[in-house]
Image (cartoon, rainbow, N blue to C red; front, top):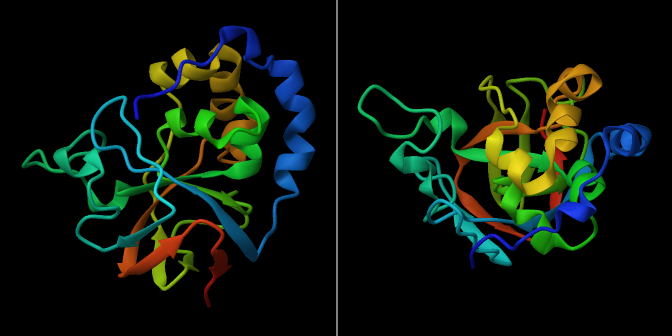
Length: 192
């Protein structure tokens, strides 16, 4: 499907988003839930499978990151350290509402109900979803013009400045370290 049109009248103000910060930061610390999977086959296109097999070389098979759509290697291929982008469900819910179809345009692959702040999930943190394992990478994840177009300038300011930047509300990048299958509703567990 292509990105759904989001009514600019529903864009949240910076003040309204700031009021939601305590709820966002109250996300589970050690055990969460996978709420949405998104594969981006090409710019502006989104597929939302209920389950998918993930692997180290591809991340989420069929996702366009591998063609160098974001962070790239010298040969133009995608950087495996940016192969899986993840956002906190509580944050996108504050920005886009309850309908998960409005979450997909954010451009993230996984939306999880878990605290992704640097204090809770710094780079190097390993975590499992379903039978797959991931590691948080050091690649920064920032809002861009497309995020502004889809959710408004205030939403981008909220995740990219001040407390939003400090708490990494735009999300994280991770890579698959153990191939496996993940499904919506799976638990998300930090690993030792």
